[in-house]
Amino acid sequence: MLKFAQTCDAIAATTKKLEKTALVTDLLKVTPLDDAATAAIFLSGRPFPAYEEATLQVGGALLWRVIEDLSGKTEEELSQIYRRHGDIGSVAAEALPAKSESGLSLAEVRRVFSQIAAVRGPAAKAALLRAILERATPLEAKYIVKIISGDLRIGLKESLVEDAIARAFEAPLAAVKRANMLLGDIGETLRLAAEGKLAEAKLRLFHAIDFMLASPVESADEALSYFHNPAVEDKYDGIRAQVHVGKGEVRIFSRTRDDITDSFPELPAALATLPNDAILDGEIIAWSPASAPSTQDRALPFSKLQQRLGRKKVTPKLMHDIPVAYLIFDVLYADGEMLLDRPLSERTNILNTLLTSITNHVAVQTLSSQAHFGFALPEPAPATVLRAPVATANSADEIEALFTAARERGNEGLMIKDLDSLYTPGRRGKSWLKMKRELATLDVVVTAVEYGHGKRIGVLSDYTFAVWNGEALVNIGKAYSGLTDSEIAEMTQWFLAHTISDQGLRLEVEPKIVLEVAFNNMMRSTRHESGYALRFPRIVRLRPDKLPQDADTIDTVKKIYAKEHAV
Figure 1: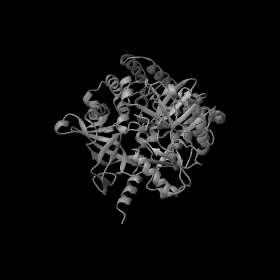
Figure 2 (figure 1 turned 90 degrees about the vertical axis):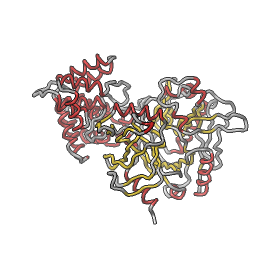
Figure 3 (figure 1 turned 120 degrees about the horizontal axis):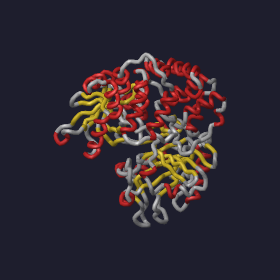
Figure 4 (figure 1 turned 45 degrees about the horizontal axis):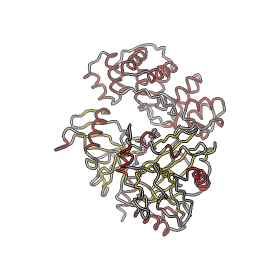
């Protein structure tokens, strides 16, 4: 464990990716295979493989109490250390008593993590945590705490660990990445690489894989500059959802790969009727069923769907008041075969065939330049599962006509897809495009919050937010309008529990909350590290479906600024 911790410190000390990768490679080469597999998991910032459902359920308050108890330091002394480092792992490293030796192994730490996950109650978890930290050197304790808190903070992404595995065991990087994606276990991936068996990796159903992403375009002409005769779908105002179906079980995963099945209990029954195992990609939207034969079903704004998100219990009344639909637009796995390397045109045919087995619940629309985008089902169903309607377009005028029709239906715009495109998880290339026309918006990460004024005294309602510049977040604005009172109250509790630095009226917070913000225009400014400022920014909505790394970058900001200020 000590060698692992020393390597982590060395990784944190350099900003160069090649040096970070080399350090990991060297560690994996000299470490016994079982320990190397555990090290790979820990270096990915997790106590367990990604596919496992075990969670430690150890919060910052419990970690703080154990460190306070073991160190003998006062609350104020620990707070001063925290303000210097902004990281509870570093607090442990500085506050805990020094030790010259350690007998801790990576296997022991992993075993204790499993024990912590298995026991119930803070007292039992604290006892196990105390026991392992008492044996650890301060440096080891630093990284044990960091892994528990889910925030390694050494500038090491999982992709670099994959690269190091490929280098350590002389395996193709693409094969390492694919195996890790299929298995959801970078430790097992390392074992297969060491044994030269990466090709034997099989899909682990009910482990969510990354979603393919789309790049924004401003016009139909720009879209057609990348490819011709695209498939065109409405862009809906919902949440991306990946559905895994197998042996009668259905589980639904969000874009952040969280299991959200319980939030939509009406959907699994319809999807479970698929005859074979499958992984589907689509969008969950709030839904208004047709009220009369002459009317059409239609999608509702995201604000409606938001009332269904994050609930531990969904009542029949809520399902009645806010019906949802699952619009399926892709299939990633079917009949025992991964389809990621098949072109979209083939996946479309496979999907349409697959969905004929649930036609009682599904409106299937095949590719057609005259596709009709209404959703009038013959009979309202208790669960609405639809094949997302799709058209083809041969010209910019056809795309513009489809865009106008989508906006008239209340949808955000269009998704424009290359029929020859393979499904590339986690990548935002030019094979899938999204076309919207509205006030400019950015997905940003909250970095600091302030207490409000007037009726908002006592709640944190003023949010400073940032975009990515490389691996660093740089602030670009502050907004205080757009959220409801209940959302502000809920977020106040979250921010208080995830404060990095308390500066009185202003708190620096853990950069984990993503917002969508709109603004009127953008200016150059020295007020923020980004070099830009937004004029009249306002919060459009919280984005719990997005991870911090999904937020926009400074390159996007520069493009928006250049377009707005073009002569």
